[in-house]
Length: 327
Ligand SMILES: [Zn+2]
Image (cartoon, rainbow, N blue to C red):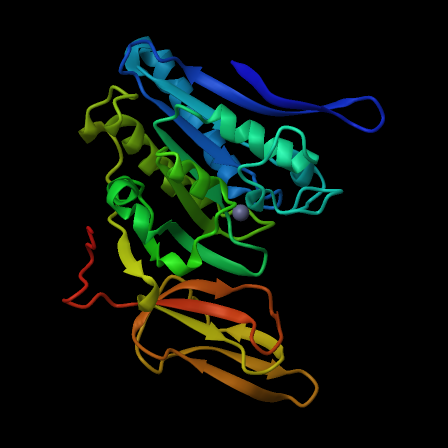
């Protein structure tokens, strides 16, 4: 069932709405509700495709067995659809990042109203999954990012999401105006997924996350399916800020990565790429791994200036940290 969470009047008398699709219902007093959010940034598409995949999967399951869904799944596939329609990350015209407008207001400019409407609509949800891609410069392995502060509640959920990594941020990086921070502060568990790259669609990552979402729906009692009938889950590498190495450009030029380096474990001193100077025909910088680790972020846009992000490495887990940082 399609619903509109906000309708605004456009300048030439027509109207624009933010829509959601509701599948199932809270049949019983203890039935749960999950919300899948995508497209808060208009140039990120992995979440939209994930919504499509999960929606289709649920419809197929319901066709076979009407009793399979005992809760509610809400899809918000394109929150910033004006941005989507005009290839804008930001909310067009106002040129603001919608994910810096929360909690919003019901009287401010349109992006603030959109933030307010979405936050209100999500009240009472048992789990929210906010799916993002990276920007258009760097490609990311599927990962969930969270404030360490929320880890006791969110980490058990993140581990069931079939992502490659869970990145626990220290308190210094809290962004108070994001959807996830606002919801988590309201005790509505919210996972933020980052995967793929802006302005492109990495199909396999949506398929990977779909498997995790099916498990989460099952874990919450929304999907009545034996676990053995669901795809096998991968276990994420859990890391903290100090286990992430940033690779930044020391020169301006063209970044040329090594072949098939993305998503690979590299050894210390292994070559990750070069920054080349087309004019002089010289290499300006050879980028080597500062330590052994997984290349989970890699620049795809070749033009770089000094300081540009080229990639990130997740260091290998040590015995003291381990792959499992329940805390
Ligand atoms: Zn985003």
